[in-house]
Image (cartoon, rainbow, N blue to C red; front, side, top):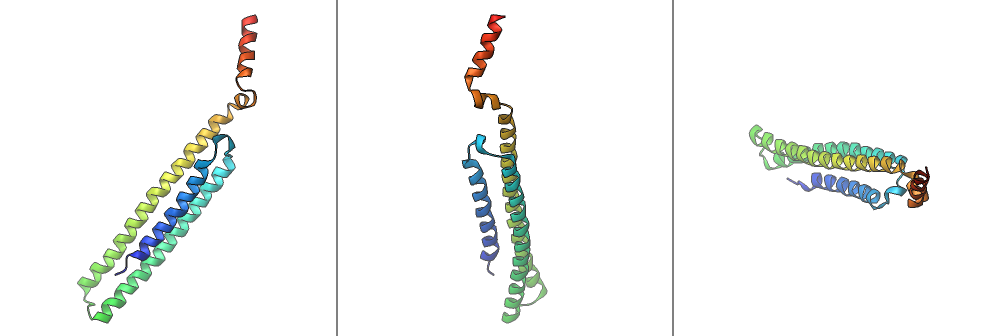
Amino acid sequence: METMTLISATSSFMKIMGEIIADIQRMDIAEIDLELLKLKHAELSDRFDIFKSELERKIIKQKSHVEQDLNARGLSNTTMRYGLLRAVETQGSDELAKAAQEYNRAIEVIALLERKVNTNKGRWWKRAFGDSFGFFLRRQNQNR
């Protein structure tokens, strides 16, 4: 029984997801736009949906391969068939669980970056004027 087909689906999804998150994290917080984060979130969501459908297709393919292999060897009794098919389903659900966990982590990273961007938006005057604006306000308060 080949398990590499299911793992290859997961590893390709993990690679794409890692690249998306790495691209976002390389940017400076001041350069990140909320629309970009929404776009990356939507892209991750789409990729995860594609991954799930691809994994389901590969599980079905793997199960048919197992059945064909058992029939070719004359080992198609119900106990052995059930055990091997169940193993394929278990591996598929394990791979889906790993991918879902990493997907959720990536979404949390995006949410954290959104909060940071929103926090920095309130400090636009600091970026625009630097500390000189605060100095000007302190000076006016001293003159009163």
